[in-house]
Length: 169
Ligand SMILES: [Fe+2]
Ligand SMILES: [Fe+2]
Image 1 (cartoon, rainbow, N blue to C red):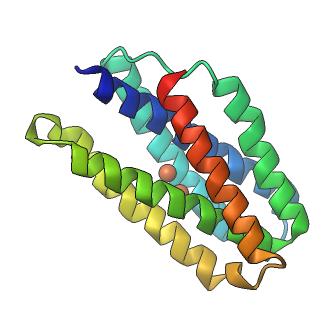
Image 2 (image 1 turned 90 degrees about the vertical axis):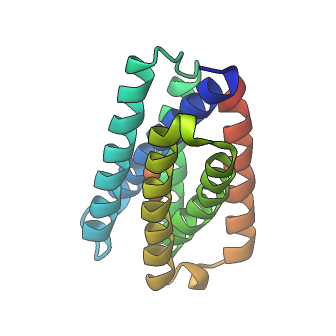
Image 3 (image 1 turned 45 degrees about the vertical axis):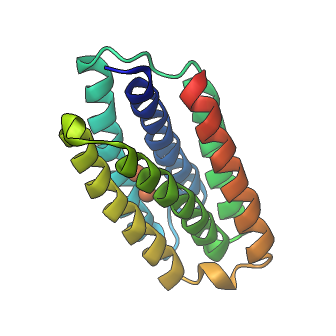
């Protein structure tokens, strides 16, 4: 396995870990609101994504990022903070995160050849799920969240930064 492949698995594991924590944070605030069932549905899919990468980390002996404790807190905080702003802001968070992840997975898929078919297929499947989450966010009024453009840009920048850091550390 090349260092590049190892970095891919490391960052994707970190990202899915963070995603599951974002939904945990959102549900801590919005657990009884109208959007709770759809948040739970997305959280469940993130758990499946996380399980798959956790399995890959173990099987292929990839070192996980040292920053899992940070993403544990930061993911939950991002989810809870956007949820406190309202259901539409929570959905705006999902849309922004998924846009960043979509670009990230597309980049990785393009870099993989048949030697890494399993990883490539996994990423393609997960990317579809993430795009579905983005669409759910849009259908639930993400773009009507107060300060949508600023919020969205800030979260996308944060995600890209988290990706770059998790590949290396
Ligand atoms: Fe995911
Ligand atoms: Fe997602």
